[in-house]
Length: 104
Image (cartoon, rainbow, N blue to C red; front, top):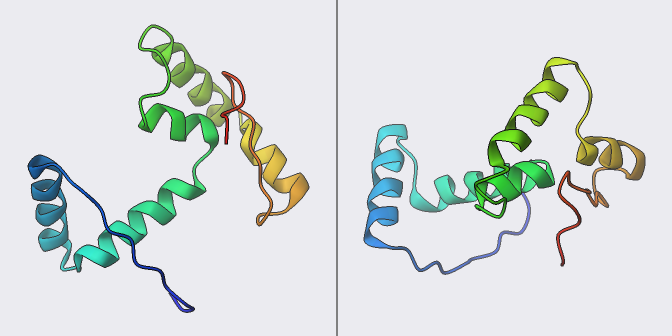
């Protein structure tokens, strides 16, 4: 990774800090490197996947959303966000989701 980097202060629960420390130690990485990679990975995910990870999809429909996403992947269909990213270019990607737009 090259280019100008930004610092971000995070407040973590003791359990979250312990989890990061275990993963960091196991992979021989610094905390900054690990968290930076996680945030970069998260940002590249489809909006629906982000919503699932953040717990923003109600428990009652989460299994249906997961099943639909898996069916799309198995059929080789891009997700809604993938289609928009391909049309708009990677820098200006603005993904729609299966459950509606996320307010900015």
